[in-house]
Image (cartoon, rainbow, N blue to C red):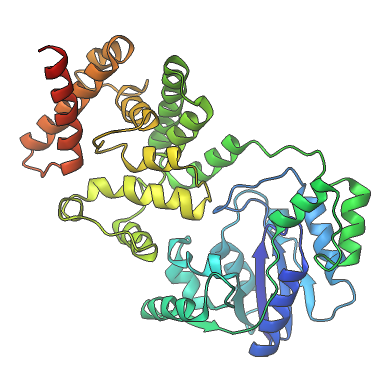
Length: 395
């Protein structure tokens, strides 16, 4: 039996999901399409407080009476973070004679190499997607060729699909607009009857960030991230910056710290990020660059203040924004730091922020030079800018 697996938040499930599944089922000769609502998407930040039970119920109502579809509560029943490889391995063990096809939207298809145990997943499923207006078929086929170089099997099926998003539907409900043609009638009735998406506030993003970090970081680095977030928030409140953004940047600044080098380089390649010569020779810098990409492209946090703070938290740069300086210094002075000069740094942060930046940058330069390591031009530019400013101020 050929089974298509279609996972997602389905918050709510809509006609775009169902149309894509039907197109792929016809093109691939699938016997069934199994919708698998996730308990906690590891790559996305949930934007509403809709319960797992609500999303599961809406999937069942949307597919009721259609023999093509079945709905699995596997991930919701299991609870915790949902990683596709774990679900696929469970299904393969339960149905050893079935062939599995993983159905996904174009945006998720373009992130496949960042997924947990991608190589193992590629051995067990065929990856399937369809183009959309902003992601044409040629882009998907080019990426598919890259994936096939890793041993994956990919199918890109062209089909004219109407673009609908769960975000759009939640917004329309909030505005009191009609959902005709966007969700199955039974789903629209369920949303109205249960008052979904009307007054619900966004789920606490910090807890979601922490859940993702616990999956990606060792305990000591996770604790460091919490400490940096606390210090960044403190500095933001002291200096008149946005404390919530500072806390978020602090939490996520090391999100790629324990991702292996190959995967870091792959995500940079996937999103056309080029490393300069010094960065290429300095793998310790990669986590900041790939972390900024992951934060923006995978988690969907596109706030430039947060993204650039993460990007430059290791090297610094000339003309740093206030948020960049906050994260840079918070990383140096967080409560878990215990290097020789940390007390000096903490005093300077409260008494002389420019002095703290000069001290931190000179400390970085000394450490790198002592070890014979190259010093990134951004670090030199940041130090020179502050040194020249001090020279002018002191005549």
